[in-house]
Image (cartoon, rainbow, N blue to C red; front, side):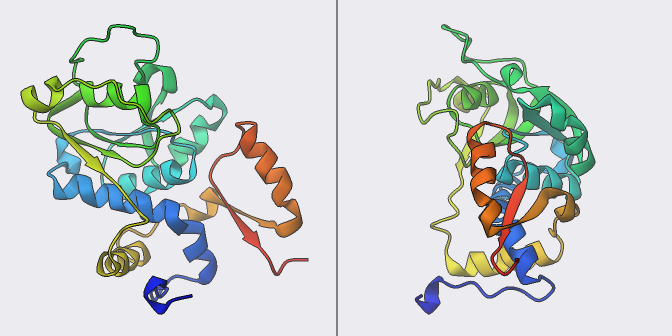
Length: 228
């Protein structure tokens, strides 16, 4: 592997912790930094995290809450509400409450409900998030599980000054990678990593994949290739 592709594990993180955080935690941290850099602070108001039981989502709930934000977690898995609250969510909304999927002619603006969001879903969820973000707020977009299309309107951008921030983990420059991984080992270190991650043996991976495809997965899975 080319040396320029490799990020050294920072002091304070084990190899297991680095893999438990992984690209998901790195992406969540990129979103947090982007929102803060563009003026969305804990004092601005609540932050929505969509897809909250997924790898990026659950670590984002942990990171944002640990950084002092009030987190609204959005999920379609009611059985994981207590788990999300334990990670730091102050409020939980069903996924249909933050979506315009069933609205053929949505209003260009919705009542403001949050200061910003980290969106793992895209599509009709992104449409609702942008329309409901307060003046000067920001939405960081890092996923498209709900679709790549965006039925947008310019109104939130020109009337409320909402910012739409693209988050890319794959094209992040190496100096940023090193700095952010250092933060993930220090001030942004996830507080509930043990509750987020489950180690499994390699021979258990097919069952985990089936669980994911059936929509029952949550959190992070780390494969222990040395086990049994």
